[in-house]
Length: 313
Image (cartoon, rainbow, N blue to C red; front, side, top):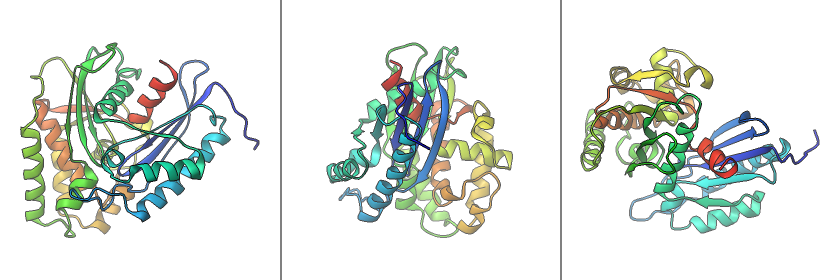
């Protein structure tokens, strides 16, 4: 196939703590998704609170993954219309400039490391402009990442969210700090839960009202699939409802499972098996802190907000 640049075709890259994601879409008439891919690279693996540096192995595998994704975007015609953002791991890393330079040299991809506020704005935009929710009025978005958890509230059509709350804990970070035994030890789960509870107790959220709560990120989609007991395609999960009770049931199921058993659980992506317990602790606490008993699932996270903001605004 010959690579042809097409001015209607655009690509958005999301470089996160746990994974890198690519979205390629045709904007000729609305937004038609052409290609999506997620590669787990654990860019933020091993980063220490007192020495937040990216390690060589995670940097190398992330650059190689992005090299292949950039080649795919070029193949589909998006070479000249790409936008790439980096989130928590790159925000925190003392050597992020080295990574950004090496990535640019490897595949020509220019990465914009965004603030937590900008990440929240783009994640909210991804939900606000989605046909599933763009007529809902007030939205509350819960975004569970690898390095941080965001709760964003706002009104559909507004130029910016009303409020953004960030907890500097994500599924990767919480797992590395607290959960080491296989299966997780009771004291580890208690320590992780206490840490998350303390973090959320310090945030101020709006009182429950007329918000539609929407969850984004791999933790949310995997919990929804586990609750259904089978693998589900993204379009099947998009817009479905998950209750607090279902989240707690999934947590009880995971607590007694070792890593090998988690990898075989129906609905769970095996690539996420080692961090799913930490992710579910965060999701359960985040939803509980809002005062709502359920959320709707979005399978279209930050990369969609990047696409909308870069090429449709």
